[in-house]
Amino acid sequence: MRTKIVAGNWKMNKNLEETEALLSELSAKIPDTDAHVIVAPTFVNLEAAKRALEASTIEVAAQNMHFAENGAYTGEISADMLMNIGVDTVIIGHSERRSYFGETDDFLAKKVKTAVDKQMKVIFCFGEELEERKSNNHFSVVESQLKNGLFHLDAKAWKHIVLAYEPVWAIGTGETASPEQAQEMHAFIRNTIAKAYNTSVANAVSILYGGSVKPSNATEIFSKPDVDGGLIGGASLNSDDFVAIVKAI
Ligand code: PGA
Image (cartoon, rainbow, N blue to C red; front, side, top):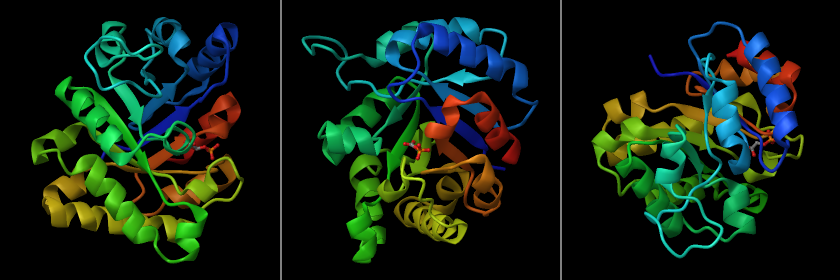
């Protein structure tokens, strides 16, 4: 059985008080579940989030990290800094990092390597842009993002990897991939991993869908056999919506 995961990517939202308020609502409302529930607040509130969730099963992730051990990288955060405050999960390769901050596949591959070397869990994001889907290049784009970002890992390292397929045209747009489109791509991703590694690696990796997941569409998307959960942006900022999505898994 693959691990089911619902992760909330809060992006650049919620100050300290708002973070604590949302986490206390989530702690009270999240039902007992076998799924892993993860929240990713902004860097400055990670420590407060860890404290607020001490007695909870909700896990805390960072939204990014640098690949270097330490050094002259003004404004950056290292894996050790995250681990030092008890954060051992990190989102790498979100499309906003790729498009607004110029993070390339090669750069992301280095981050993945560092995180895995540090035994962190990586939620690796990737997905095609609208033009790439329209021109029917979505499978080859996704294949090359996987290959360039992740296929330097050996098979054993894959236990640290969670995948998040997020078609860029569905992020924050209200436009969701249909459950069939999600399933089709998730099956392709699993097959690509099986070919590059083997079926046991492919069958063990959790593949999340992200892009305008809401309480109204979560159940249908999560019902697909290769969809193992979701990476939730906008709807993770409201406790009722996020809890409803967790209940849909
Ligand atoms: P969204 O964002 O749910 O607001 O579309 C998803 C994401 O960016 O991870």
